[in-house]
Length: 390
Length: 238
Image (cartoon, rainbow over all chains, first blue to last red):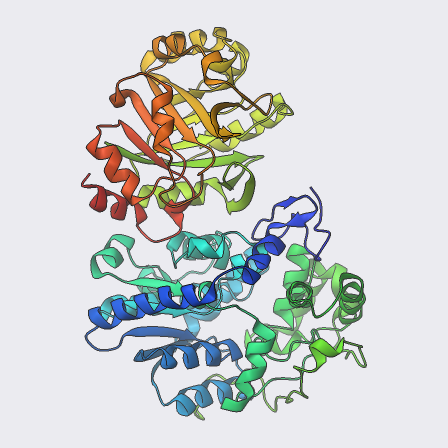
């Protein structure tokens, strides 16, 4: 019971992983994709669409977005199903100019109604500081909001359905079968999105913020969601999910990928100033590997790279450095504070604290055919998308 | 009728079982308990799916997790309770009922009688896992990881020593509404002392309610959708 013979994961995966007969639950579940009757799945999805349309009074569904390539794919599917969506986004204050372009392009290209929630920056920064200090994680406050705010909107506006893209716990660790058709739950949010660190863990001995500032950070009471008939589904339970191929297909909608030195995947989380920088470094510190491993495992499972080649590619990308200083500037941290943090919290990773690039990493043609040259951001940490700077 | 949920605990982490063959990871026990409580689950069975390689160290490790649980819902606990010393270790745990399986099957009654002395007869449940082997319904003996014939099990003693009997359809565990009603024929007992588990779906809940079965234990499916227990209760008219 150590690692999977097929992919690069072992049982220490943060979502939990079972390895039996040398194959992990993630690989076993991935194999279901080749035996599932996807036409039947399509019918099941259409039943849900009919249910939502019958129940809705204004919008049929909410599509929570961050402006990622996956959001383009999901929104395109939602519209082709005949649903009338409200696109809901939470500002993470970490977007660069590419991130804002992608969010605005998504809304304008598909011509959908949208709502962007800008949380109180003072409170948000306090929570990010605490999250960094307590859990070596800088995205927890955002993830907390991203997984609760759309649910609040659905409840308040009586929108019956929330449509998410992939269920990461299935795609990575195979925690459920596709046949289980798992839906959005508070339990899953706590277990997989927040790693059991809900908002209560970020206050008290941490951020000194008032409870009334945290309303949207808290998940609505599930009894009230039940009474309102709100449910959330994952499209990856109904389509044969293949992120690289799908994300490549969103280029025709005007999605702009970003040049990436930490992974070959130029699509996922393009437009973030931190995702492949301090966030990836902290992930490496917490769980022992970087995001590129998730991307490689996905490609191994889709048969586009073999395990040995994937190990070599991971080694190469693992040499790339991280530019963490812009984040600390955003956090208003003093130079001495930065030095203290690096000395005491990142001492084992100082050799990675440079914006070193990776070049000429050979990838199999089956992967490179989906890749183009990504854009380079002109400006990081753009607080608001339409020209206001505070 | 009570509607409960069963959770498998291995080395302090919870798993889901599919057909008694395949395990999938689930998550931390406290997170699961929190949600089941919010779903108004009537009872929670925490079961250690142990085989012959179980150890007292692993048993104690799981007890530490259970001891720390913050839970208002009645909990049943079982799996690997082989002797009276292990029963003594269960003292001060926040559990209402104890589940014995192999001890009943192998007629090892000492730990059961000791548990009755400590906790009372009402606290004893007997779990009988049943599966089909070569077309024949058989009892799964967890400790030896083998199937044995139904006739070799002393059901008279089970009826006498346990307050409730949990019949687990191992073939259909994790499957929606797959519960095989044939397992009910293996024992002649009032349904109001029976708990059924393995492949419980909404239709099975309705069937159990109509037949005055004491309780149903929904396995993997409770956490697959929000507030799922309420759905089962509404459908089953509970």
